[in-house]
Length: 476
Image (tube, rainbow, N blue to C red; front, side):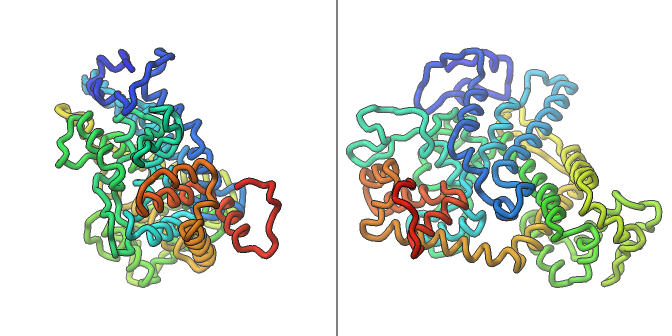
């Protein structure tokens, strides 16, 4: 597939635009990245994100974000960052470098495709079931979905399911370009096949090892050099920005958090210690508890009566200065009024996006990096992890988590026991029949469960365990 539109753009080389399975482009007016973008938009995996939990269970309210709306927001933020970078490059006289905005949106839309039902607890449940066979990890699953599981091109009609007569997996998934696949490769590390550590390892599966080698070859990256493309880097910070702001907005709407509660929480030293540990681990820093507390105040100080605050005395040990600039009434209004909530998140997103800059690598543009000032990066990480600790790890969501983990593990147990594969839908059953070895067969079961929505998983579990089974005419 040729794309003359990229000939005067030094960000992309022709080899990067190639696909594993060569195709003839019938619509030459579209760039290859526009084609890839369309393939993701129309894929079942993308549609199913609407039934997967983001922060709060989908059935609690139509207001709360799900994985689909979160992915749309990440794509929009990534595109905004790309627009900013392209403007900067033009003003710097580097018009021959231009980040493709379709590719940025594609990365944002695709980045969470690998998330299983019930969010991170579902990910942990599947990982525990797959410990001896390569584990499970959401980003690794995303790459597998795009390169194998989704259905777009048949390489050989003799083995239409994608597995040849010797059990070799010949599927090409959506058959995206190598540069598009690179945009979702967040962790360039192979996950060990056998692992006794219950902690999830970030990376890609052994089954995608040759694919990652091919991506690096096409992008001109040595196999022993770590790859994280500039598009993936932008998507990653856009994801963090979305987490740090929109999950916070959902928590306000649910009335589980408010600016008053957040600024009051600095006196909880145990909470601050937990938050500090997570933030320092992610940023590889050693911020003190005082810095964490100061930053929490500063985020909200700017939005309220800043002129009434002596910022040099904002924090004193175990003594909040809430009423000087954060009256309860104002905090309550933000929780109750949609206009104020939107104004708050819009302010934060704009501040964070504005702080992201580009470090261009002219010799190898794919390895260009984003840079962001440490203070803003700290704010993003604190808000993201504050919501995670206060909500996802809270007792009110723990029951949902425990239930979700039980459902995922029980479905896996039932499908992996003798003759359990007969419960699989016909396409997965055919794959299971044709692949060789327990490792590959269990991976097929894992793929099936990972693709479930929360509702589908609950219903599947109910039909396995309920004393009141549903009609046989409702298909799996």
